[in-house]
Image 1: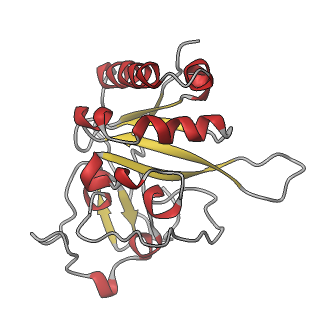
Image 2 (image 1 turned 90 degrees about the vertical axis):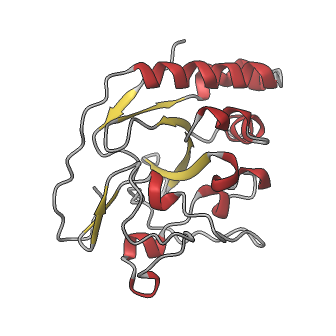
Image 3 (image 1 turned 90 degrees about the horizontal axis):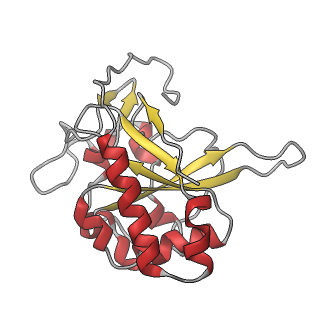
Length: 211
């Protein structure tokens, strides 16, 4: 079954809806000099606004933050999936792999009081498809029935594409066919990049809520 793409004017945001559960961090993993989130993601906070693909104006040449001690709550509370999820391979640190993983709030079942989370894999460049551990990490999420999405950024400041990939990857994951997993990801990425990309205009926020 072909993947169904969703175009989003909000682009890739640090603020994920329904992420009100405190989640731990993986021991031994630190951001270090990685500041991929300061470039790749849209920030729409009353204190700071930037579009995806544009480097934050507060990012220094050494990738540190000029306002770290007073950075907005959006930045203060965000951690990527590599920091949060043990089953995301060690090799997928965003600045080394070109792969940015994020948690995504899902609608929980009506009879459940536990929030459900999906995982978004953003491939920041073509080389990301060759990142060690990409296929294995994607497959782990699909095999565990975690909602898994592939996010394809548009040009800086423009709309992106995002699609859930569980169903289209099911056969390759069941047969543990790593080349097939990577071929499917590459095909979906090509298709997403071929879609029209419109300019994104952020609306000013005063409440600190999600975009």
